[in-house]
Amino acid sequence: MKIDFANLTKAYLEHKDAIDIAMSDVVSSSRFIMGKEVQELEMQLQQYTGAKHAITCASGTDALILAMMALDIKPGDEIITSPFTFIASAETIAFLGAVPVFVDIDESTYNIDVNRIEEKITEKTKAIMPVSLYGQVADMDAVNILAKKYDLAVIEDAAQSFGATYKRKKSCNLSTIGCTSFFPAKPLGCFGDGGAVFTNDDALSDKIKSIRVHGQTERYIHKYIGIGGRLDTLQAAVLIEKLKHYNTDIARRQSVAKKYDEYLADHTTIPFVEEYNTSVWAQYSIRVKNRDTIQKALKEKGIPTAVHYPKPLHLQECFKYLKHTKGDFPISERVSQEIMSLPMNPYLNQEEILYITQELKELL
Image (tube, rainbow, N blue to C red; front, top):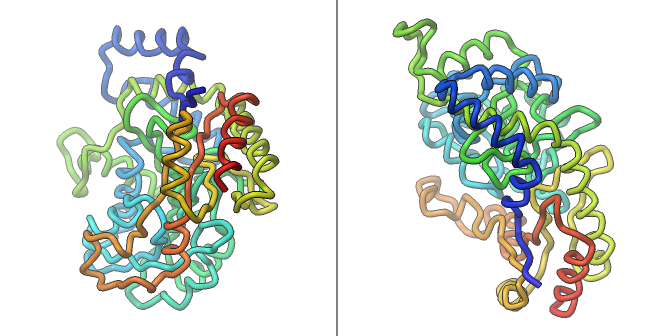
């Protein structure tokens, strides 16, 4: 048996006719930049999350950059985030000349340990950026309370959690600004790069929209330094069609995760989801001791795996200037050596899940 890790082909084929028509309509109109589908998608994203404003953009990375530029993050400012995440979370901070200040993770959820944040707050701190990892939101109430105490902004990096809930509220609508990604392998993915920024603040929304188009307030009139960060109309058309079926896809992912839990709970460290959370299962990640050996053996059986993430950010060469050393964030370091993601997509069937878990259990 050969397993597909994300099964993007099936995700397309399931709704092929509708997607093809939607894309063809864009091509026929030749409105490739800021066509009507972009505005339509933004309205639907607002309705879906409950956020007052949804501003689409070119990628999840651009979403973070737009958020920080709108908050006037300057060189030397500090932003608190996690060292156990995709590099974009901290890379974008550094890109703007600000300083990523890392806080270790909670070992059960792999999200930022909210009990360690306050000790890292200084007079230079301007924002907290919790990452909603693997599809589960961080403890946003605790983060927001700290932010209010110290007059800080909160940017939820929700690149992996669009559609997830925290205490019945949707991810991306839990803080000053929420940012997500529509990279193809995300739970809601387009056919290229894409992202969105969410806020309930009218002034921030207007500023983000302007920065997204080179700081323009009207054609060739520039109020801010900005970027070319628009979402392509073709990607918006794809996302409109996929969003129609997204709740069904989430339910399917949750069903797959539940079956994994059932078969693996007595054999390895399975993911933990807080009782007040729901996850969209961007990844289903377990902990194993002999990861390389297990990955190699599973690959020979036609079972792909991945590691999200093999080296914490504080140990990456690009952040050498921060002068962190091994041992600074021990939980992130330990988890990075043991974490392993199993195939996760809405199309895994009972036979495939049973095959994956049976082969895995023989190696544990």
